[in-house]
Image 1 (tube, helix red, strand yellow):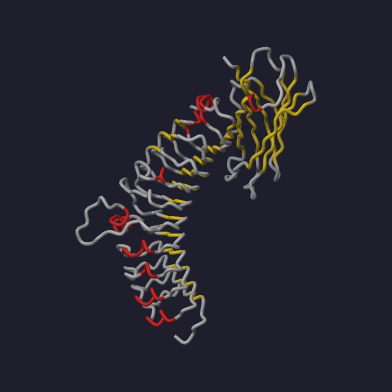
Image 2 (cartoon, one colour):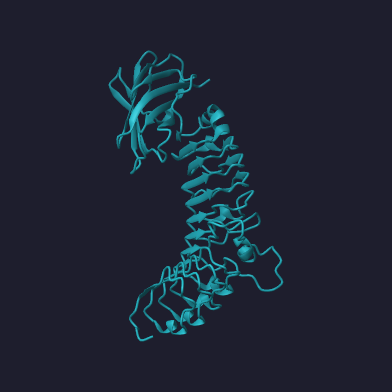
Length: 410
């Protein structure tokens, strides 16, 4: 090719492209090669490995592409490899030499899952305990810069070990056949986001790393238990997990996590126990799809504020329940701020705020529930004094009801 300064080639959707000419290896300045959706492409020339400046290679939806060049690991500048929905049967062993690779996507076929078992192609690479006499199996060893790994739609099952990915920050297991999380999850020292969507066979979640910021568990219809073993609890988004009945470890919460609950019937039925488990923690935000404050709350009322008298008994903390409504999906997410004031003394005792994930528009009502321990209040409240709780929410969200429940030390 006579284009030595060419930096980008985008051939996305070229369904008639059958091969890439070997002269591509002479494009010394090429940084991006996008071949996504080139459905007739069956292989890549070995000369592509000569591209020392190539940073991004996208071969997703090349459904007839059967292999990658053996010397793929020579592409020393490669940072992104997107290979979702291809016919690649195994990855070259040299992939471990890609020291700068930070984004690897190996998602399977997202549409015709009944006819394609993507996991059968990459199982030998992911699980060295599975016998494969035909070849020496590649591993994750060496991918020390990998920050994002997408293994969605892979048919992934138990037995995988991911513990060697020391820089991994985001991990996606959407639609895999896992009973439990893969080994080594707790040994990922930089992991921040874990996505578990439609893992219908997943029974439990445990051994999460303390660095995790967000845990998203959607439509995992068999999961029964979630265990936290760290004081740093991630924000948890739990949607349509009907068998989930318990979240263990909330009593040792040392940070301020948000727990979003939607259509988790057993957890909702056990909600009072969930709150009681958190009473030893410092602060907890829970958001759920509910329009009613429980009958057992000691103080309930309409509107965005509520006042109550402090009893003479010693109080450990209080639970605040707010019902808010939005007529439509709200972006950006509404920002809620709440204040507790001692009206008798004219002193603000506590103030906190958070974003409320009103992701769904029907039904319109959500509840924001908080537990506040009195150890966080800067001055004591005495029996007979009047205390007010009030809340404001941005972006047109209306506060419909407020409730406060006092927790005595007994």
